[in-house]
Length: 446
Figure (cartoon, rainbow, N blue to C red):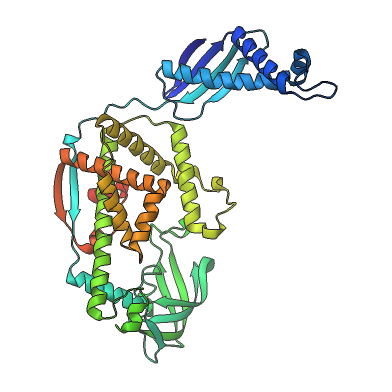
C-alpha cells in the first residue's frame, strides 16, 4: 500500500492511497468462492454452482463490497500511520478501480488542529457575587402577586399601571404604515410595550376619550423603514381597568405547587428557589467568562465541518424552542446560517480547547461530584430518589451529567491559575442574562 498526504488548505487533507491489484483480486476471488459454496441458482445443486457462473452473476457486487472493505481498512491504517485525526467523515473519490490494475482512491477530510495551550495565569477574571436580600424577596412576592392579579374596570382617568383597551391607527406624513394599526388591544401603562411617548400620552385618559399622539420611532427600532421617523397615532380608549393584586392566602400559595400554606413557609420556599436560580446563574456567567478568556488566549483554527454540524444543532434547538410541536418537518435551511455562525464557532473552539485541557492535565471525572449534581437536580422534583435512580440507570443522561461535571472541574482548575477578583452585585443585576461581549465593549467605550 502506498500513501501520500497533501495539505490542500488549512486543516483539509487529501490522502491518496494505492492498493496493489493482487490484494484486490485475491480478496475478490476468496469472496467469490465463499459465495459459490452457499449460492442457490436454478439448474445447480446447492454448493455446486461453478465459480465462473458465480463471478458472472455476482462479481460486480462482490468487487464493490471488497473495495469498500479495503477502503475502511487502508484508510484507518493510513491515518494512524500518518498521525492524522479526521474531524469529519472523509469524501472518497476513486482514481482507478479497473479490474487487474492497482486500486487507487483519494480521501479528503479535515483534521483536528494541533493545540498547545497558553498559560492561563495571565487571565483576569471578574467573579460576581450576590445574595438574596429581604427586599429582593419582597419584590419577587410582589411580581408573583401581579402574575395572578385581576383587572377591574374603573370609572376614572388612567394612571400609570392601569390597563387600557384601545384602538389605534398610526400615520407617517399622513400615510398609514404596516403594523401601525390595532383594534381592541390591551395595553398596560408603564409596561414600555409601545415606543417612547405612546403610553405616557395616555396617562389621564378616560373611557371614551380620543387622543392624537405625536411620537418618534427610536433610531434602533427593529423595522428599518421606521427608524427615527416621526409619527402620529389616533387612539380611542374603550375602557380603563385597575389591577388588584392577588391575596397572600392558601389559594394563592397552592397555585405555585408548594406544600407550604403559610406566608412564612411560602416565603421560605420562594427564597430557596431564588437562591438556587442565583447560584446557577452566577455559575453559568463565570463559566462563560472563563471559557471566553480561554478562547481569546488560544487562537486556533477550527474545522469548518464541525462548525457546520454545530450550526445545524443550533438550528434544531431554535426550531424546537419556537416551533414546539410544529417543529417536525421544518426545513432547517430556512434559518440563515449566518444567524448561528459566530455562536457555533465559539462552541466548537471551547469544545476543542476544553478537550485538550482535559487530556493535557489528565482530568478525571469526580464521581462523588457527579452524584452531588444529580442530587441537586433531583431536589426540584417531588420524588427526588426516583429522579436519582433514573439518572443512574440511564447511561445517556448519566454521561451528560458527567460531561457537565468535567466542565466544572476544568473551570475550577483554570480559575485556580487565573487572577480572580470578586465583585459584589445586586440580585437583580446578577440574574440578568450575560451581555454579548461586543455590546459590553461598546457600553464600556461610551
